[in-house]
Image: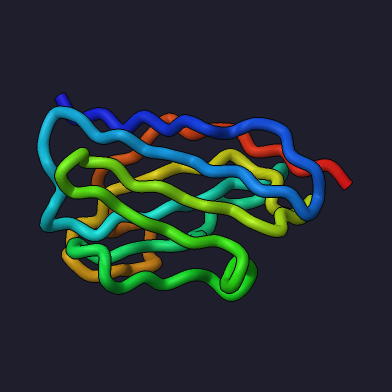
Length: 124
């Protein structure tokens, strides 16, 4: 059974940093792109950032570019999200997900496995 478990969420002040991790089990995803999505209060879930299968290409949404970075360790079957210079509007439940393809895609319909989410709250 495939499971994605996120960790590292919590409370941060504006301008601060948090690091989220996602550990996959049940199968390896070394040939799949992986991504992070988020759902803010009263908002639809949206793409945040993704990384390709090998880890040498990533793509971030405009609203986090320059502040968030993604990395992966295929040997450990993990993906990480480093969030810097956090803003109150980054408050959301963050989900990691595994894409159907090897390159980054922002469309969530093409992600087949999802974690349960971890809450990130940024205070002003």
